[in-house]
Length: 315
Image 1 (cartoon, helix red, strand yellow):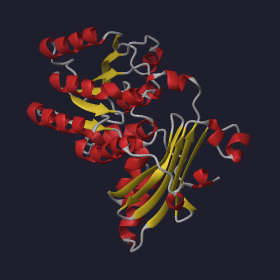
Image 2 (cartoon, helix red, strand yellow; image 1 turned 90 degrees about the horizontal axis):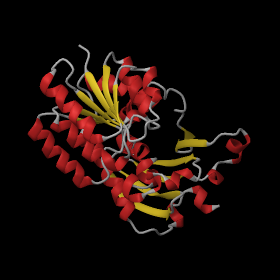
Image 3 (tube, one colour; image 1 turned 180 degrees about the vertical axis):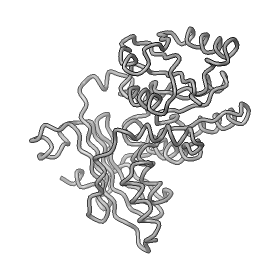
Image 4 (tube, helix red, strand yellow; image 1 turned 180 degrees about the horizontal axis):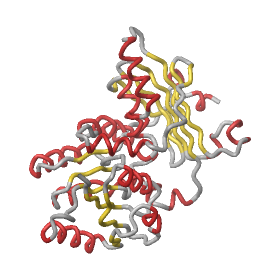
């Protein structure tokens, strides 16, 4: 049976992935919210959805549907709003008796997870997040390979992610540590989640460099040692990428061998939605480790350790 969805952050960059996932899983969008009214992308998926630019009116509408029209009552709230609003919007969803599918990071701080867990218990509703790399076919296969191998020595991992952003980034909410959580949270959290999912919990962490444009460090996991480097500065792109006009470079190597997962990204949100609707979503317990890690990275002292440094910090 089709479910009714409401969506926050409808004008944002990631919203079309959620709109498509709602559509492709056979559900419908009944209401959407964004303070910015450039929301025409909704028409490609749900041209009858009611749209609001003010949260208060959106809230009133969803509450009215719940009380007066059970057929149109919202079953799920999809949250694509800026990171610092995720917690409040998840709380709103539970209050109107809806479940949640929230874009990562689910929240910015570990204590927010604790509070949401308590509200879940009180409301009987569930909060799920989008950890789409966990459903990528190539990475699922890698997870199974690791399980079968049961390695006796720790893998040597090198993570490099450069995704160029112009001056607008620092002016927007994404450039604000308080609102986005910084680079490690905003662009790195899904990679950190992936690495912990594959290689186990964090045993030791270092931050070697940190600025509004790049952050780098070292993680020791149960089964891996990880050098990591995240950047939004195009000057960090490798020459080969620049020559091809590419603005993004993504690389994960394991013991010197590249993990190839550049393809197959287009349908991952739909897979996450489908699994969530089937009762196999990623809940608070799955989201917690990466939230704890990036919160720690924000608070950690910055000190270069040449022994564990990423190659780009050595050049």
